Length: 80
Image 1 (cartoon, rainbow, N blue to C red):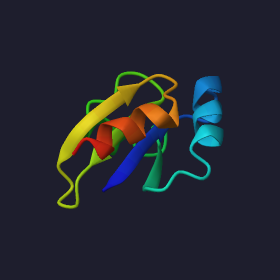
Image 2: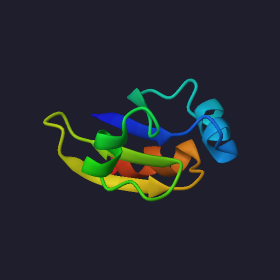
Image 3: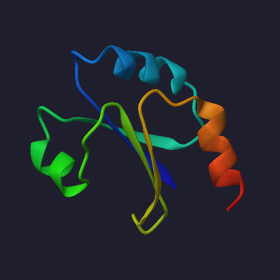
C-alpha cells in the first residue's frame, strides 16, 4: 500500500499535512498539483490536501480530503 498526497506550495493545510505524515509507516508519494496537472486530473483531485490510499496494484481504496489525522488513515487500513 501507498499514499498519493496531492498538495500545492501555497496551501497552508497541505504544509500541516506534510508535518503530520512525516513519520508515517506507509510510502507516501507527494504530488504538486501545479506541476503535475495531468495526474491531478486523472485522480479527479478537487480539494487540497487530498490523500489517496492505493493497494499494491495501484487500485484506489479510499481518499481523504482536507487535513487528515494519521490515526484516521491507520484505522482505515488496519481494518483491511
